Image 1 (cartoon, helix red, strand yellow):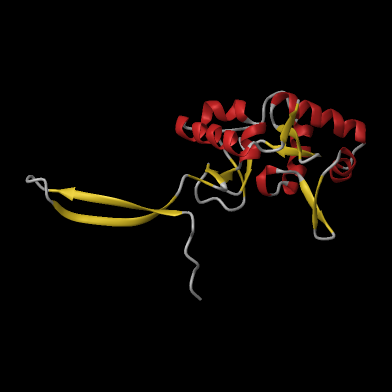
Image 2 (spheres, one colour; image 1 turned 60 degrees about the vertical axis):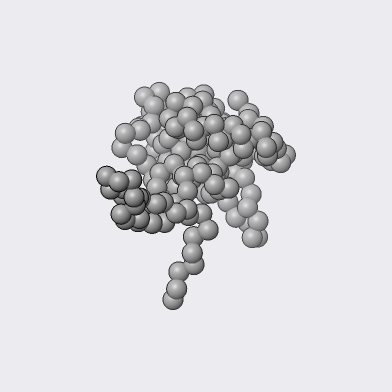
Length: 185
């Protein structure tokens, strides 16, 4: 079975020049674009949920809170959203549905979510009128690209970690698209 060509690749040329200024060898290779319509390629060659040894949860979280977040990690889907599928429709998790996953009361769940939002582990945004919770890719990353929505919600973190050209691409793209996303603090 033949593989489909990746539409998000570009050609990289390496040219070798001799002393006279003439090309002696030209090598071409296909490379994945760092930034495209899907977003910025944050961690290459990752296809599943990843955590990073250099980024641990903040010390403000107790071990019980970290265990609860471990349960929520399984609910991270594309764009770092905490969502579930019901009747072939993707729906955002609510405090009620998160409390069922965590097997605790809604009050405890709301306290955990607010604490995680305050320290930057979780984010909340209203996208096209619906409220979504997002997991910060600093701690757990689903896939390998950072989308515009994730960048909008966690741009304070990305300002210090993304290369300047990638951050500038997001700013330009934001001005062009004007996505309907409102960050809820």
